[in-house]
Each structure stands twice: as structure tokens, then as C-alpha cells.
Length: 421
Image 1: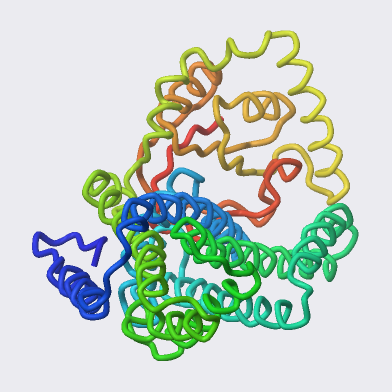
Image 2: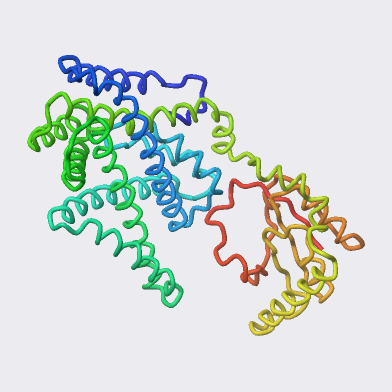
């Protein structure tokens, strides 16, 4: 488990799987020899496949991050990328089920970490299978390029109108998720064509894409880690059926497997080794480096915007807030909550209008500045603590909904700092 917090890290399981994959590779490479003219290109083919895999992983991360946002899990892009790359070695587990370890960093971000991790895993695996089946279908009918272009342009069209209805927005999310899956797998499948071309074989792109997709589907269906002994064998048989010589088929598949599965797993293991402490901090719910950055920035944060522009902006937005409160018959004197209050400018301004507000923020430096801005009034600062037991705020919460339309799904484990005026 890459995210194990105990001192006993069961790396032996991953090492065993890697050894099994190496043994399998040696078994079907041992009796095959490449011509001397092709050996010099094997390294180039493997490196080219690694580059293609890197592009594929970038698209898969965008899909993964988009999926998390869709189910209302808000991870910073840097944290999301770190977790995604650290989970890459889990492709060495049956059906990539090790990706369920996503539940560990989600413990502080959702009330149902296992359920959300399972949804993410099932959606990813289901979209992968659909993408491979669609690739085979479009190749069979000679429509692959047209299908990819259609997906791209229709997704852009849906993006322009997705705010015009809830049903359209949901269709856009599903369409974009499947579109990213189709694009990622089309890029991954092209690695076989690149490897064969560099090793001196002449093969049509659709035929190589079909061979890759069939082999990957069959290997995934078995549930074996990375489709060991099934994916590669199926692709080799497909290539031999296409009149590719057996040695060339074997070594091109080897370059593809090394540059896809091997490269991705190695990238994940290196990331785990280099960023293990950071991952432990994320799992433990500790503050991230970006929050520390805001602590350092807090004293000079107010200087980023000229005072007269800031005051005008605060007055304009506060007027909109007061108007909305009046519409719901919430008079001055009502209690309110500003989550993510920053330096407390809105808390201070609305307090002048008679509202009793509480400002909360995760950044200690921002709270210290909020205390100074609210000086002369009753201020209370609490750092990294839960709200006081028994303290309540009526359902008439004040929140800057113009900027933040969805509250975080789970607050119980998060620390807050409070500044009340």
C-alpha cells in the first residue's frame, strides 16, 4: 500500500508483481532474437512509447481530476496530481483494484471515502472498457478519426450551452468524461504503431490500434495484474496474423509494455519515494504547502489591491449581499457565517451595518490580519480547532454565494480559525 502510515510498508507485494512481470517478459523474449539492424532502434522505440505514455497519463489525470470534481471532491490540482501519480503502481494489482486506496487521502474531504473511491474506480474502469470497445467499433467501420473529431467539437459545443440547463450540464460531464477516455486510449494504442514503425515494420495505423485494443480488453477481462501473459500474447498473435514476423512482433510488444505499464509503475514508485512525507501529510489532513504560502503572503495581501478599489469593491458586493438578505426578511442584528473570510473585510463592513458575523478561515496569517481589521470590536481568534461544542448559528447563514456555490461536503476533521465581530 503506497499510503501506509505504519513503519511496515508491504513493498514486497509490488516487488513480487514486478518480478512476475519481468519473469513473464523473459519467458517470451528468451527464444526470440531481433536482427542486428533492429536492435539499435529498440531503445528508441521504448523511449518513444514512454513519451506517448506521458501524454496519455496527462489526459487520464485530467479525466480523473474532472471526475473527482464532478462528485464534489475538491482537491487542489497539485495534490490531485500527486495522488494520481502515486497510485500508478496500483495498475499492477488485479483490475487495478489497488486504486481504492484513494479512500485514504479522501478521509478528510468526504464523509464517505470508501464509497467515493469505489465510484471513482468503477467509473474509470467502466470508461476504459467503453473507450476500447468504441475504438474497435470505429476502426471496424473506418470511422475512428471522424469519431474523435466529432467528440472534440460536440464537447466544445456542449460546453458553450452547459449552463442553460441541468440536464445539458449532466450530459456534458458524461460526454467529456467518455471523450477524455477515448482520446487517452487512442493515444495509448498508437504506441504500438510507433514501436512497429521504428523497428522497421510496415503496418496500417487502424490495424495496430485494433490489435492493441483487443489485447488490452482480453487482458483486462482476465483480472490478472496488467493482463500479464494475456495482453502481450494476444497482441503478438494479432500481429503475426497481420504478417508481422514473430521476432518483430514480440519485441515491438515488449517495447510497448515496457514503455506503458513499466514506465507508469516506475514513475509512481519514484514519486512515492520522493514525496512520501507529503503524501503522509495529505492523508493526515495536515496543512498543505499552499496554505503555508498564504500564511507568508497574509501581511502583504492587502497591498495587492489599492485601498480605494478594494473599498469600492467591498461596498458594491456588500450592497448585493444586504439586498439578498432583505429579500429573505433577514434584518440587521441577525447572525451570519463567512466561510473563508480571508482578512475579514466583509465581516468588518457588514458588522457596521448591524449584522453579527463570524468569519472562518484555514489560514492563520489571514486570521491575524482579520483581528487587526476588526480591532475595536469584540474579536475571537482560534487556530486549528473545531467550532466550540454547543455554539450554534441559525440557518440564516451568510455566505458569499456569488463566488462559492457549493459548501465543502465534510468539515468534521478540518481545523478552522475564527474571527468574530
